[in-house]
Image 1 (tube, rainbow, N blue to C red):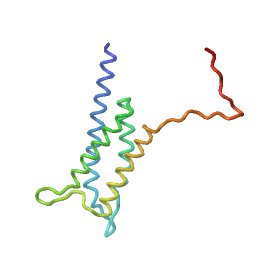
Image 2: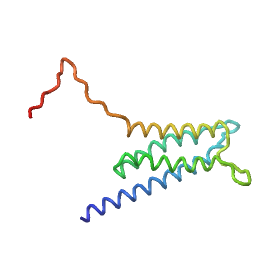
Image 3: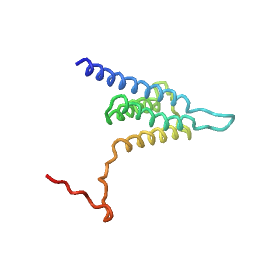
Image 4: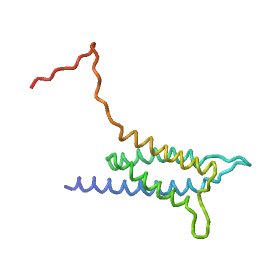
Length: 139
């Protein structure tokens, strides 16, 4: 009985840590949108968003042992990024509409899409060829 309780605690704790990491990653990425080297805009936030969204989804699935954990990190990341891209009452904006801002949104969404495809894609049955016919099962 104790083993089941410990496993449940690890799964719930893993889900909480994965969501917190997704929120932290989204906040850091949002503030890295206006990253420049000299006069050149560098899409560092977009590259981080793709890699971290993909990795955090895999980490969440590993900890929680459920494919649906991908959705936890995706919703947490989207909530922060969408909130940061809306102007406040004073008119300030964290994610501005620039090349780097669009790169963050596109690359982060692509990272989530890749992880969703990885864990929710349909698995096809193995096709048999005439050289390797299907084995008959006896009742």
